[in-house]
View 1 (cartoon, rainbow, N blue to C red):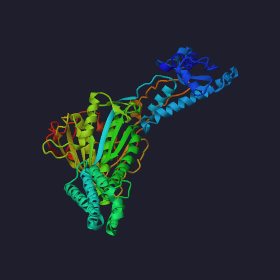
View 2 (cartoon, rainbow, N blue to C red):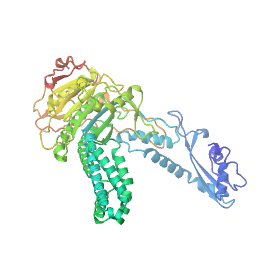
View 3 (cartoon, rainbow, N blue to C red):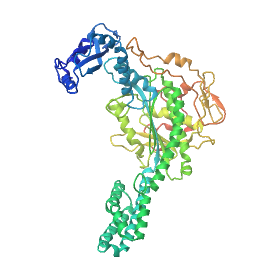
View 4 (cartoon, helix red, strand yellow):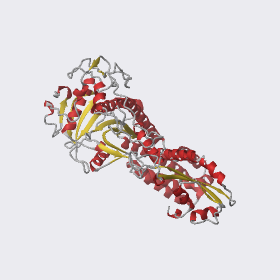
Length: 593
């Protein structure tokens, strides 16, 4: 802006009117005009595009004071001839100001919202902010306060060791092909003369690399080995082909054929490994996405799914995302998250047979009862970051918990075919103990579980865990059926064929919607455009389930789930707060309401 000080551009913006400069040579107060002259322009017509700017919420978005109007763009028309524009052009250009302003707003909005694939549950807030800025309002941070984090993962156990094994296998195959080339070269000593001595030295170097690779590979083995072959062997192929016999030519042909791919190296075992990982991830992702569609019907929430060696999901749910969100929705989402992870575990039970691999999948859910604040930082690639030291601690635990070990035995807390719950407080444990009872009642998990303390992580202490074995599906179809609806009541399908000890599971949601769900006020920005508003929660749908058998109705799900902060006593877990390693029968835990 310093370069524009005193320029005709700022003059047009300050006066908020179309400005004609008949001859730039006669009116050249800044470098901006001189650059136009250097480009061949002599006359200039400037069209400032300003919009109303309301600094305080509730102010008139169309103030009469021009000082409250903000510049969003400036259109300039130039001509190589002096005095080209006349007063008649000002009248014609005035008709273009509104369309040009709208075009600027839309371009700005698209630029602001295209930086990432925004989840539908939070897209309304990004659209709202882009509209604010397009109307000249000052930027506001995009923050969702008081949202509950629900994190879980399905990690492929042994994927790193398996990858090292296939890297070793491919490198050994490529070095043996290279050895065959040098063997043929050395046998053609009559054609090479004294050069056969150097070829023999190359052959010995290659054998030394082969011996090191056969003992194991390190992080840099892959890159170093391929670079060695490229610089010390493949670079001499043209000479070998022109000077050696047909045996050498055949060996070079086989080598080049083996590395004729996009990786320029032997990539057979690694390609099979990559294909297996993609297939496992595809099965897990497909299972999770089926459940995620149904979880969105409970209450709109943000969900980020990442795929590496397995999948991990990060859910944020709360009233700042969906105004009708209540503690009842939170209970439902937590329970459905566990059921979804159990279904991923069931999907993983057949991976070894279907994918022809020895790799297995472990599953974990990390519990945090306290809400966090998330915000969008335009300077980072991630869509959301957490605010505050307390919330950052949760992010640190997320990155380290999958490798955590039990304090007493140093055994990994996650095990193949099992669901592990990691938590911190007795309050969190009592809540999730009840959820595990429900899972056992429905036939998702075994009634016995193991509890213990997590070995201290770097900077993190006091974590505990509970682990249960996931049962195979009772039917051949592992995916959840479409949710059933019955007159607005909550319907749960159970494989047990009994109503269970919590009685009557049917409570209509009208009272919940009427008492707890209050609409959130969205500030009005302008009279001419309505900002995007958060999506309305469609209410609770029936839970999906794999279970076959009788359908039970339960009248007080919210009371059986309990409030988030409710206290549940358990005779079998009276010592679980201190969390010694023990085995507990879920179905024998009698928790008082």
